[in-house]
Length: 113
Image (cartoon, rainbow, N blue to C red; front, side, top):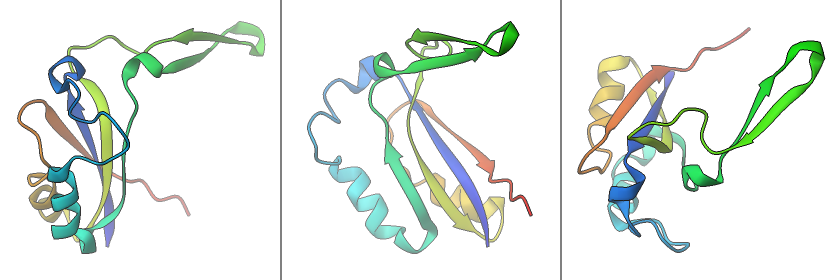
């Protein structure tokens, strides 16, 4: 089985307090229960305002800044790692990820030997 990373992008402002508190949203709980055999992992991320970026500078030092790597309308809010035979099977699982807006980017996980 191959692994696919399903990156979930949504507008954090539109999410409001949907993911406030320590409990996972019920729609994601239902998605996980229905797709448990295909999910290797998954996490929700804290808001993009909590991000810290590290970029290399000349001479081996680094530049550190607050905030997301790039400013966009939609932010990376979480991801699932899907185990599937092929991209079509991974997309069938990813289509079930709860979201009213935004998008999902699916990418194969590269395996190094």
